[in-house]
Length: 45
Image (cartoon, rainbow, N blue to C red; front, side, top):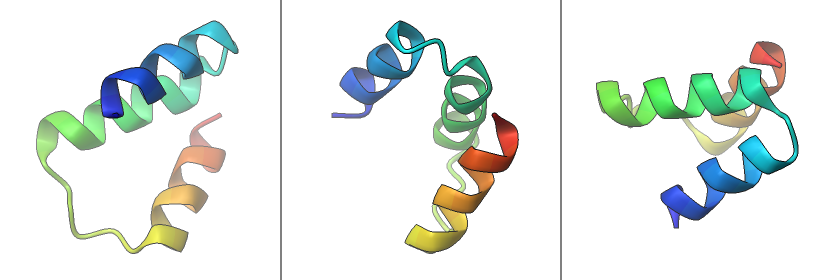
């Protein structure tokens, strides 16, 4: 599912979100709540 999400972000040209989400997955930052993760992704865009 994460791979599909990353692909969709690229297709929609949400490069900031793609980079932030990819970094979060690679660094294993699973300590975000849902609303914190969404806020982080939006701020990255």
